[in-house]
Amino acid sequence: MSQQFIQLVVSGLAVGSVYALVGLAFIMVNEATGVVNFATGQMVTIGCFLAVTTGLQMNLPLAPAYVLALAAMALFGVAFYAIVFRPLQDRPVVTVIIGTVMIGIVIQNAALITWGSVPFRPRSPFGRQVIDVFGAALSAHALFVIVVSFLMIGLLYLFIYRTAIGARMRAVAQDRDAARLMGISVDRMFVLTWIIAGLLTGAAGILVGPMWFADVNMGDPIALKAFAAIIIGGFSSVPGAIVGGVLVGLAEMLGAAYISSTYKDGLVFLVMILFLLVRPEGIFGERIGQRA
Amino acid sequence: MIERRFPRSLLIAGAVFLAALVLPAFVSGYGIRILNLALISAIAVIGLNFAFGYAGLITLAQAGFVGCGAYISAILSTSMGLTPWLSIPAAVVGSGIIAVAIGLPMLRLKGHYLALATLGFNVSFVIVATNWKTVMGGTDGISGIPPLALPGWPLATDHRYFYVLWGALAIATWCAWRIRNSHIGLAMIAVRDDEIATGAASVGVTRIKIQAFALSAIYAGLAGALFAHMTNFVAPDDFALSHSVIYLAMLIIGGEGSILGAIAGAIIVTFMPELMRDLGTAYLIVFGALMLLILIFLPKGLLSLVTIVGQRLKGRTTHAR
Image 1: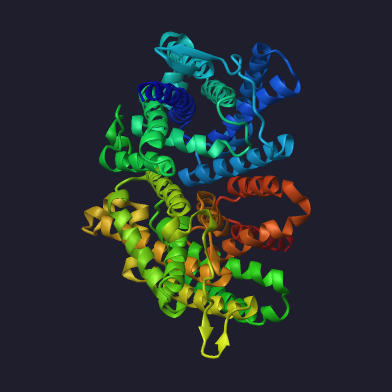
Image 2: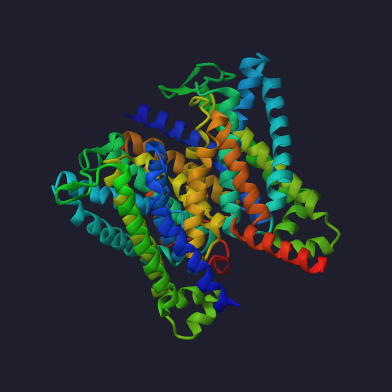
């Protein structure tokens, strides 16, 4: 019982930190550019399959395989910026929603044609290795996912709050026009934002691959959970995305084990809707004036 | 200008409507099924036009409400044994009630937040429909839904059902037209254009939003019920979130805020994949890219192309003189 509980908590934390990474990709883009990117889930898919290509199909060692996949995701972020974001920028909210959903459909079907409909099982750097903690057999990969995710989030935090470029990005997020008047190249900051979004979603895809399967339809479920996570945590808050992601991951794993495995996703969305209604600013609230 | 234009566009629309009556004589079995699906979508999109086109509410729940209508009518006409003539109105009313119930708390949200909350509703609907096997049939759905029938004349074939849908769409269009020009429709547009000023003019903004939301769900419920009695089978996949996005895309491609645009958008977008059959698996890529291009280059919808071309031609002829 308690061993099983520890295992569930660890796998919940692992899945939750993946949601946190994806949630952060949402938030970074939304804060800097005001665009809610509904194709974020498909970016995770691409990240996962790029690692399939480098790690399985090209059979590279995993370290260079991951680096290569992440570099490709950074490029993907730039391409997304140039092809999708630039034309949709400053359009009404609904146009952006539909536009990014449509590009998600394009990406998903391009992935289907490229990699086929049969799921892959990506390798983990730790294989199926199990670590014994207090008698509970914990998957080494799950622990790896947690460590890497929090390392990435920590680095991102340092980058945004401790570097000059990060300060410029925050300035653009706060007031685009004022930032431009201060001599900041807003466009360059946008490109950087999309690169970060590409890296975050790419990492999420690489990490989640060995836990589940690499399936071209994997994007939407992950994106929906990440949505729930950032709403629960607070739509524009970095700690909110982390807490929200972990909560959703834990709710999913523990809910499936102890409450109902069929309604585990329903539980997550029920909590999300309750948060929207009762505390729309999430746990780590933002200025309420912006939403009402 | 407007006074002159409206009767003409209505006249053309009326002519097209009447001309459509002879269509089944020329269209084969598969084509008529797609045509029927287009008419059903048109009803749902006219409904969506109340919420989004007039009241400016971004909702990603329309497919969920279509699903509510389809399942209510399906359950009532199979396990309860009700005649479709009663189960369809019940589905319409039921969808409206559900919309009011979830609209009361949700419609306090705006923009992205409303979009995400309604998205949550749509996803939850599919989860419930997939898992509540005893009532909603799970992934297998509900089969054996009886077709509509007049005494001694079942409307079981797609060709006959076309006329049912044609009639339903005509009534739905006429009602929408009346509502648009009533004080309810005008109040919705006022809320979209300036919510604060409308509230200050002591118009109940929340009540109007709920009316718009309920109207869109009522139309969706009708569309869903009509769908259920055409296919005789409902399953969760037909009401997934992606369909809500497609309904929104139909409305925008036709031209938001216009009833005729809603119908045109529904028909164009339904037939688009059929025209791209030859592309095989790549068709969704082309479809998505095409939608994106229309959004970027024709933000007022595909029908605005007609006006633009018209103006260009006019400009050219005056120059020539």
